[in-house]
Length: 250
Image (cartoon, rainbow, N blue to C red; front, side, top):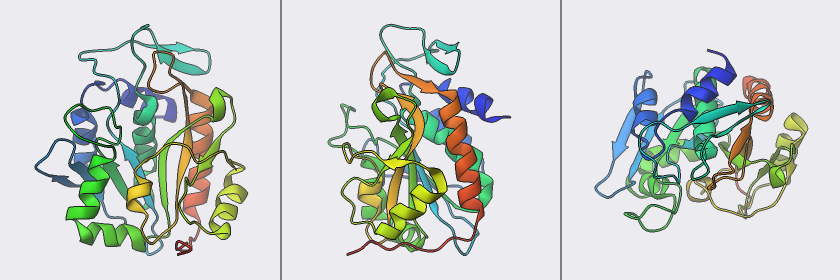
């Protein structure tokens, strides 16, 4: 299955539940599913086998409470919604598709639930990653001993074909920023928003990497197929090399 087919397959999963996403990843060797007592306390972790493993993250939930099939239209270089009421869930099903494409590289794989803060039955956001850090310190330790954390959950900058990354207000090193920028050509766009790396990164640097979607959380949402492909190709090259660990500055 090529990158475009993989992306479409993940976008076609039901928008109102992450069950299908977790079912896909749970079939992989070494997959560990962890479920807490409260809504959204759920994540799946696969420990990598490389001594220089990074941690690759995406979240399985969307903001759209649409049951049944939803219409996805391919329009030149984009996938968009055929509805005027809801989008396509590229935030963050595109990130999940990216993890699937990178799953055989030997890095740690982490899929979290309830990253979005729009769920009525769970307060706040990043419920799954908060649950991991609170209740599973052994996995939190593995993650923070890895070389770095990349989450694939970032939009195109201002809906233009301008890929970027962000580290929010994490105290990452200049060396880490240089590492990303020299290997991708991406720019640090801004630090707005919040995602799982803000919970996960307690000792190691992390960044949210663009996967090519725009206008998330709205019916105008779309994803650039070529931007997704570009990030995939850059990540294959970057993650194939010998990696070093980037600790947080403080």
